[in-house]
Image (tube, rainbow, N blue to C red):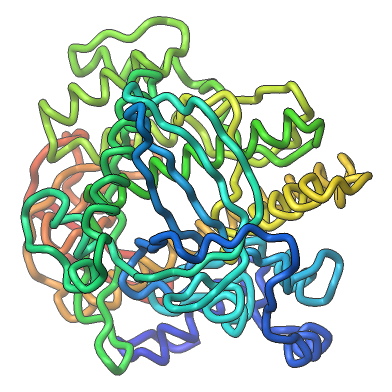
Length: 487
């Protein structure tokens, strides 16, 4: 392959190659294409609750078109807040063991490279017929939960309903408004009652967040650049998306909903897929990292102690906190999917949750679609469940492997985009922070643009957290390599 330039088409070709290198095959099979062409428009089934009159809305990225969930809240007379999360009914059109289902199983996840998106399902489905698009009536699985003043979910229920999304909102406008940094978003102001509705959702989310923090949920922060593209698909810059209060709102609702659904399936005697991050095997190294920073952690893994430590470190040194977070994430180990039987609790260390499943993004993640089918079968009283424990075990291992592969593609393409952007700046000098020192090499991240590369000359004596001046000496956009020398 020829050396990459900054051209958009070259980057798209590289993204497709990266997908295939990791075993993905994004093209639709002839059988799946035939099934897609013959699918009807979704029509409401009989017996669903009609909740179209409720003021549902969605909050997602500005450019998101695969809308998996909508939310609404209601204050109860006792001061508790009733939260409802509506999840797109993807199973209504994508049935198990069909060609379209087989297509989704191949990847098990949408892959977001920043250059081009490879959706798990064809866009006709994920961004249209199975998406909770604004001003459309759609079928959904609804999670209903009562949140008290202490952030406890006192009651949870799961059922099917017909919904209507009245407003497609985004993090970039809602977050700053909730934080008091900007004015009321136009879309919120245009719909009577929506301002009060979003503020009530925010109140419920903050209750949930406070409780999660008490339980030891980890608040981690990493720097992941996203390429900025012009109309020709060329990389013109890199940005670091920052989380705000709107992100926290959705995150807390999704964690609570996923926990309610895991308990629902367990209580109904249904084996399911659970998302788990087990107690970290390298806890001793996390303790050592804390000691190097003058902090103390217990010898036995403890999520509450680690959570408190991380909060203190963010306050003490916000600049280096993302790098500490990345180290902790690596030492915690990757999450995985596993079969959980009724009554079992595998646990998610990072979320401080004893039961947790993925269920709120069935357009984007195959485990969520599996969970949706288990929910619908349970609600209908169907027996046996649509998946055996053996089926779930095979799918759990496959979904974990494909998720790991998707992260490799996404990381590589971030590096490719960064190297392409810097290709014409060889010889320039930058201020950087050292992010890693190991047998694999010494790595540093530029402050602007936020690009990481390897220091191949003059690295002796550097240590993590050092502020250094480096000269860019080489880039390889094809491989995503960036090399620095100490200036």
